[in-house]
Image 1 (cartoon, one colour):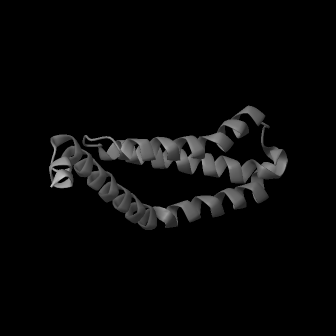
Image 2: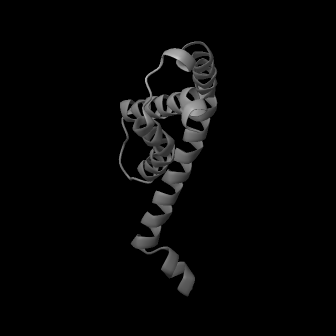
Length: 117
């Protein structure tokens, strides 16, 4: 009876609801990632082709931009997981902005890897 009363308290009920919501958001995020992963693959292939054709001879070196691009995927993923735990509605444009920033950083990392890696 003690545990029944404990788990039915408003605090634990709200914690359970937040946990369920974050789990649903994580499952939806994995689904969206599976749906959008062809775009990620295309960006990596494009960056590799650009690196081969253009950047080896004509590009301007930006080591600071490369270092920022190296750290930004980790920061963006941590921010995305933190946003998934928030209890309010997240507009779709924020998710799209995160994904575009993630793709741009991956493109910069792959296209400049031969110079700074």
